[in-house]
Length: 156
Image (cartoon, rainbow, N blue to C red; front, side, top):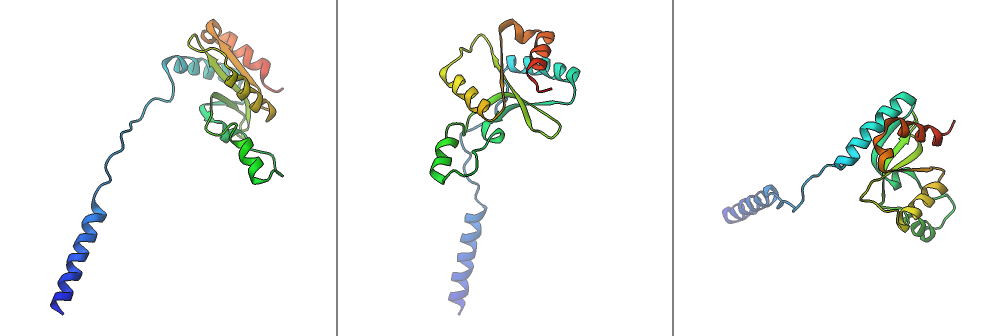
């Protein structure tokens, strides 16, 4: 009986020791979600949207948060279509008060060349009814140009 109690005690101690061990840290760290250029542009975009009113902006939004496949697809078709946009992000999403996406804004600075991937991404979001505004070069540094280009593309 004493032997059974000792075995149970050692088993309990072993279990507690294993359950309180910390999992080794993964080799990861956090990072800013925006580059310096994106931060500067974001600030200009926020000022422009404040003047426009009734809209807000979210940076670095996953496309699967913005769009979904249409009903009626079987699971294989749904996954085929979803894989076209799953795990892809857009720079900035302008939304209305109910957080419905109205416009995607892509900052195409000097380090960015329009690629086939950009064209495909714009086609996908366009098919979902969300147009993309691409802002390049000096336009990204001009508050009035940003405001006018956004106004021109927002629904009335």
